Image (tube, rainbow, N blue to C red):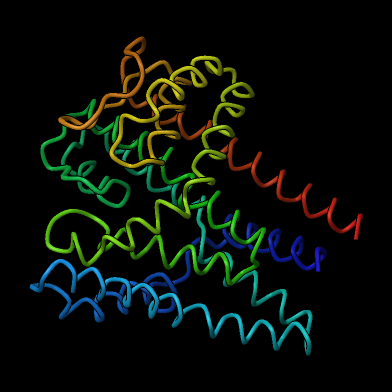
Length: 311
């Protein structure tokens, strides 16, 4: 089945780079959000223990709704129509990751900043960063953009393909469902206990991918002529400064690579302030992340070829 893996992966990447995201009306992640919103509608306002249990049920139901049909359909097609299997699997896999959309979102913020349109930049940043952007100045907008580019390089590309490597398309779908659950309810506030299971599960499934992403960022920094040794040193020094056990790895690695200090006011500072934050910092971060995505893609292809040759 290794040859299927290669064709599915390569076709999915081509779809991402050429067509980008499918319309919202048919995007599985959008429907995941709708299902989650429906399930949590009556999940709040109860004791923490009941909320936690209900949150666990929401995770299981959401993952099941989106994964079981995919598994059954692809299992059928694989045995009856290999070509249809490859095409449909690639289309579904593509919906679990997006490197093009990540780049485009960061470039929109960059272009608004370059034109000194801070209000528009703050608004656009909301698609990247899960924080209040309304009071951020230009430097902090740059910082939040670079942080998000680094963190999302794991969530949006490395992690779903990591699980595709081991568990096929259903594995990537499971990851995307868990990550979507975490982004919607895995935070403090109204859904803190309801989303606690989703948040912990997201931390677990991102544990290995986040560290792989950070290492690939260090390698990409070397290829791009940035401060690879600084990326390595800052990664090890600052990786634990964020509340997330995973996000600090990628964000501190890119901070070291660019010789900048990234800051979320009141929460953390990553890296050393050797270079000022500017629009060009976003460009440099995108160069590193795009190179990291290419490296990760090559590693997946090489893995697939080796498995195909040796089996």
